[in-house]
Length: 571
Image (cartoon, rainbow, N blue to C red; front, side, top):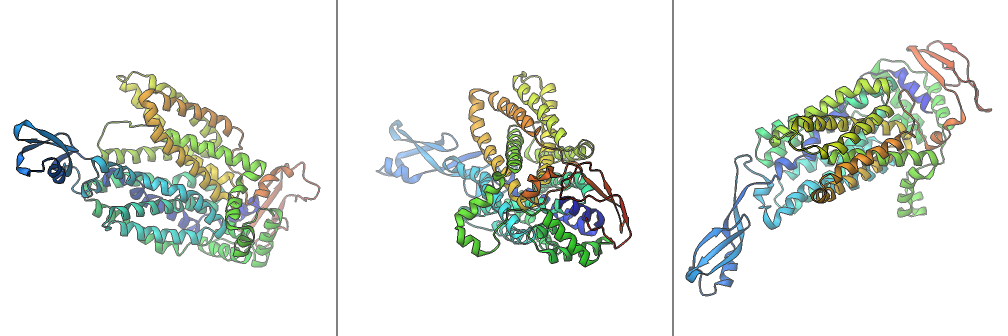
């Protein structure tokens, strides 16, 4: 199926229809940056001074009257010392603070007094998005694989837009935190969900370019976000302005069609044909007649029939039970040998790359605005350099080189004397470049390795594993670093070596067709050779037999040249 559907994409060529998907993906990735990385500007740590002690506490300790307190002095940012007559003194907690507003005029930190005993709320604001993503990653995968790509995407982005705009004007801190948690659940729809969608309609020869280039606006938006936060120092207006670009995307999503790959897997051939015919009109290309196209899609599905079927209605769910059905949708990833190997290696790979990302540290001392902009420029450079590398060398071998380079850097940097900044800084910059590139390559590699019917949930589960490890890296790694400063980095370095060894067992996916079903993946080697199908120009199809050994039940055509509108039966 995959080879044939990729052939149809080649015949459709790349035009306005495909470019719309790529543009939507790039735009969506860019506009979620402010909401994913709002913490440094919305809930930053601030310099505070205690201005008012707990008067009730004084009343309890000085029951006669408050006049016995002669004067008070700040003891630290959380406490004040009260001095009374006769040399008596007592320490009381602060209830009001003054804030250094030289950098920010208004933040959640200052508006809700998230200091001292409430400082943990500031951390929650930054971390609760990650906790939401824990739920969103697997949820996105299941929804996208069972209910299609388009409708979950539309609904999630509508909710995302409403929540981002509404959260700017909420009065209660609890409601703000809840909205952040909901945004975390919805973000995976725009990240790996939409990425899967776009890659499924990408012409095979452009998959290497598009798979990386779509992230360039995402990198640029880090720089834009740093500049926007510099210009707008009030957190409510800053997030309001950052929310406005979400709404044009809602209108654009109305023009997106359902993924034809997913429709074919689900047996909805008429709808798939309608989508492909619309794509041909938009791209100015030619497809076989409708009847022939339906026959082709039927052959595609029959050759890749899979025992793995998802319940689309309520009957199956009721019969098996909701919990059992939910477990079954995830268990598909681990049930068969090849699919299980791919899934586990991807889990390990994302775990490794995200762990290294969490341990990369600060490269250069600079303020928050500059560092956000610098991060974007660094990612931009990584993506631009990655494209020609994976076009020539594929996905697997650049990943292996990246694992090896990062392993050396992570194991060496902790033991370099801190005074040798001329050596440490270039190594950290190089590591950051490689890690950014590896993460994007891994996204593309995952989409190409996983079959259509489990693609979204396979990527979602791998990302879920990586997010959990990221949290562990941030919380446990900080404690380990206090005891053994080299431990987190060396651990990540060793993990990178293990991931490299595991990745060696996977095939490279450069110029290889995408699989549509788990069954097709598991039976890949039943046909030893490969039919090469390519198009010299619209309407002319060339099929060459490069197979020397085929299965007994499979007829492989000889070199055939057909005129426009005539499609060989085997195609």
